[in-house]
Image (tube, rainbow, N blue to C red; front, side, top):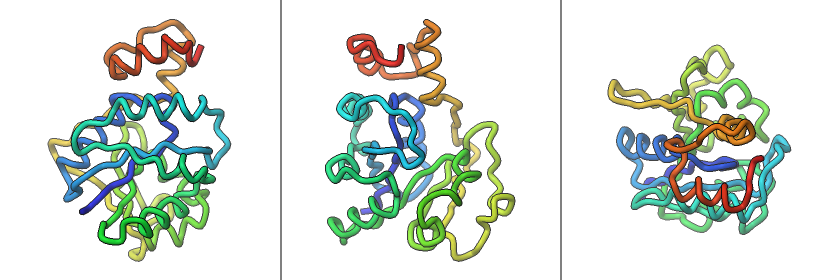
Length: 194
C-alpha cells in the first residue's frame, strides 16, 4: 500500500485538512492518507491538550482517510524522521510519503536532519494560496531531494488554517462550515480556544 502521512498539530483539525487528504487521494497514486497529530511540536508551539486534539482528529476519519497515533503513543519529539522510521519498521510492506503544504517550504531547512529527511522520504507538497511553490527559491531543488509538487488543473486549494480558526473563536466569529459539525460541538463543549 502507498500511504501518505498528513502530520500536524491539528489544533484544531478542520475541513482544510480533510480537503487536502482527499485531493492527495484523487490526484496521486496514494491508497490511504493517515492523519498523524503530533505529541509535541518541534518549534514549541503552544498546543491544546493532546487528548482533545486526538479526539477531534478522529472526527475527520472517513474511508481512506485514517487516524495514525504513533507520534502520540511514542510521545515523539515532533521530528518527522523519528515518525517515519517507526512507521517503516512497523509496516515494512508499505510505502510511506509525507504531505506538507507549500507554506512549509520556507522553513523546511529548520526541520531536524532536513537533508537526510528530504533524501529518504518522499514529500508530497500541496499548494497553499499565497505561499510560493518554488523549490529553487528555498534551496530545495537538489535532484536527490524527494519533493513532489502536487499539481492538477482540477486541484482545489484552501486558505483555511487552524490559527485562523482559533482567532475566529477568540473574536466570537462563526467556525461553521470550516470545521466538521462534530468538531465545532466538541470545541464549544470543552470551551477551547477562548
